[in-house]
Amino acid sequence: MPLEDYRLKRKFTETQEPAGRPRRNRKRPIFVVQKHAASRLHYDFRLEMQGVLKSWAVPKGIPLALSEKRLAVATEDHPVDYLKFEGTIPKDQYGGGTVMVWDIGTYQVLDGNYYKGKLTISLDGKKLKGEWTLVKAASQGEKNWLIIKTGAAAPLPRKSQDDSSALTNRSMEQIAKENKAAWESNRVL
Ligand code: MN
Image 1 (cartoon, protein in one colour):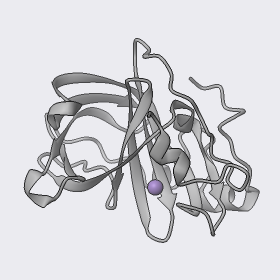
Image 2 (spheres, protein in one colour):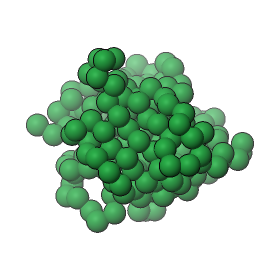
Image 3 (cartoon, rainbow, N blue to C red):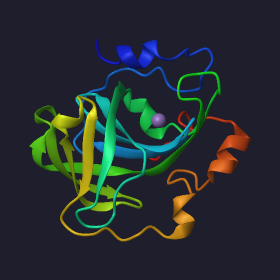
């Protein structure tokens, strides 16, 4: 059942995250990178696909230098509404901590396919632009993938952009302080 794992992990009376529902595919699918200050800071990379968001947790963030590889651990599919989720998850809930929409935009598959465990994509975000490859690292256990910068090096986002939401320009500290989820009111897509 789509999104079953997602729903089982969360109490929607406690968290402001969307319960969501599967959606139909759109012509230009969306990607998002969410900076997530949970028990450990990481970046969640999500690709809209088949009505849900295929998701990975990338502990060290998206690589920018050509051929640079980063571990990307596959996590449960998330609802498409999650694309715009920015806010705080209560500390005692699954994934408790602050979530920022660090980057968002559209993407295209250039080669390969998620289900085959290797795909090359082109991102057109506010910060990230260009080609990346995701590849399942078979020898490292089922959930481990690598995200690799392919094509060419990506320009480094300016320092000020690292702690600034692509949706609201808020810093992690501001998001945490305001404690208000933004996904319902944001109409950027
Ligand atoms: Mn996360």
